[in-house]
Image (cartoon, rainbow over all chains, first blue to last red; front, top):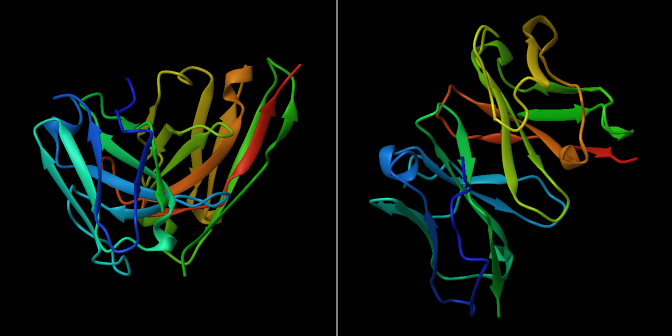
Length: 110
Length: 119
């Protein structure tokens, strides 16, 4: 199972919006609405930010939103803040009854 | 408050074995599936294994199938990962993560334990 494809880095100024893409296949992202997104600050454990494509867990800011079109899922962060600077990973359930993560995206707040 | 605390990491030589543990608290452990996810230093996340609430169903990534065994003891609120025939490429931080059932997201993660395989 190959990792889902994400851009290596995305940057934006405070207050701007950025979008991170996550491209897979019909056997993972395109086949299920079981895409989730995780935020990871340096030296910390990942934190769930979005699940089932577009749902936010309790406590996660509504500045984070998710969507999906065909084999590509997206995470949008609006009103970018300094605290959003972190690595972001997408994940999907697969047709092999396994999980696959994305390659990861480093978000930089300029 | 959900807490997951991994232990058992260390340094060992290729071909060696190690057992990781994850102590869970703050939720009804026996009601949830659990997974192990690893991350090589400076690299991305890689899912390793899943076990259902009862321990009766387990799934593994191809990279560890036949070498790693996931298990749990609901009476002790503990998750385990027995790792055999370790390779240099198994060097990583190993995180345990809570997941309601297969296909669901990893909603809580431990802080990880480092396993280093080196000759």
